[in-house]
Amino acid sequence: MLKGFKEFVMRGNVVDLAVAVVIGAAFGKIIDAIVKNFINPLVAAIFGQPDLGGVGNFEIGKGKFHIGLILNELLSFLFVAAAVYFFIVFPLNKLAERRKRGEEPAPDDEPLTTDQQLLTEIRDSLRQRS
Image (cartoon, rainbow, N blue to C red; front, top):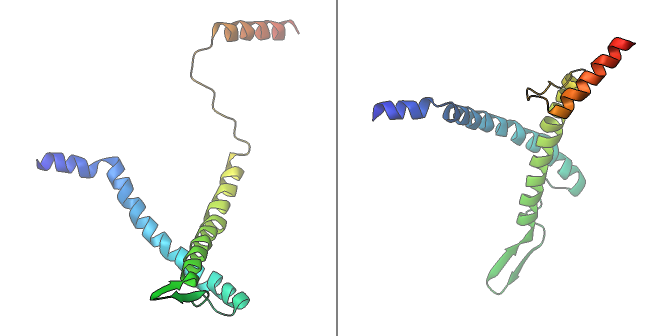
């Protein structure tokens, strides 16, 4: 029983998942800092307040509707997504593009078909003639 548990815990995907959760939590703090200290002040500069919680509140009977809170969460999601994309995904994609420049794709390890073998032989014989 303990042997099975040890194998389960030490499996690569479990350890990778644990690392991903820890890194994700730390990364979330970075994104929160970007949103709170850069994007929210930008919203405050444009709209006069850092959130839209007080916008569009109304009552119908005993029901209280808070449209501003919905807009605030929607904008918060968009700001987090924008921060992740523009500060992390976009720069990493550009870095990956730079690294791939100049690299040739690896040849396939699959055997050549009959047509490909014949074309290769024709090419090689033409090179030998010239």
